[in-house]
Length: 145
Image (cartoon, rainbow, N blue to C red):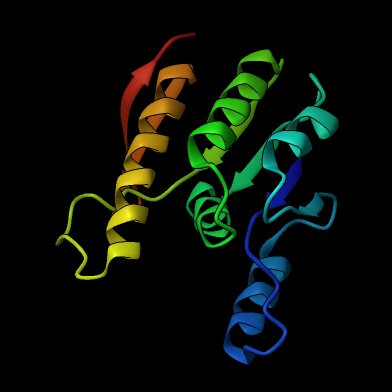
């Protein structure tokens, strides 16, 4: 298993560092970990092998990193989806559903919420399987074997 972490490393935030340390400690020792806060499509292209599963955690952090970097989200999403479609083998993508709550007051929050919804839809379109997890219970939304 190759684990691709998209969380940014925030050197000046001790609580964030504890969260990252906790996540690292939970992973099995034989997993390879890559920290990729921005170049996710490139990481998929270079590190995916048909005999090794990629676990990407998570698309929501990757998206927020790209938004804060003022990247072209549509272009980045196009490239990501193209690389996913070209990949062989298993890729597991974790993402958050942020559209089920209140509309954020701030413009950046609304932009993120809308972009996350569009990204989730695009990823679901090219995925063979989509599961929505609520309270630890997976609900299968799409399955093509």
